[in-house]
Image (cartoon, rainbow, N blue to C red; front, side):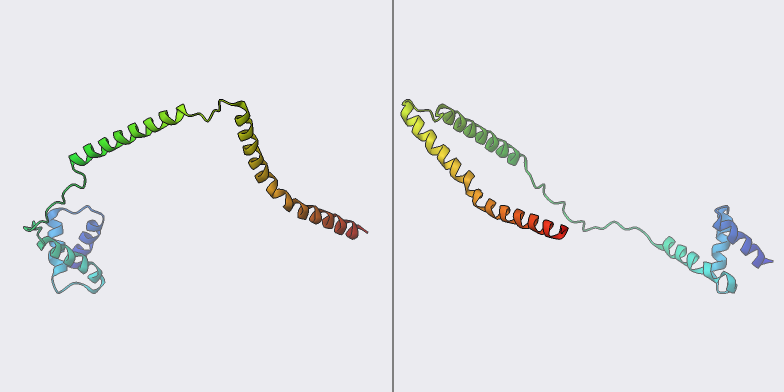
Length: 151
């Protein structure tokens, strides 16, 4: 009769419907040495709970010191001062360069400088034209092959 009662209580336990008193009965049964062979698989479960119940949480007495903050308030102030100084220096550099627009008073000098710059641009633009000869050769060979295959 007791074995049948334990089986019923085990089923109720697995479904979460047991009372504390019934769980104590199960715990007492499974921690004993005379557990039925077909119920042996539940024994480790109750052994684990018995061991876990004995464990206690202890507060460590030698807790490590908290690390010091990486950035201190004076570092933020120093960074902002550097940022403001850089912005002022950069702004002054732009204003000085904006006064020198590269203009020439003498139109002849301006024309010579413009021609020199345009010749330089033209030289770089015409630099790639030598390779176009090869493209024309490829095109004629391709057309020749196509006409030969169609015959």
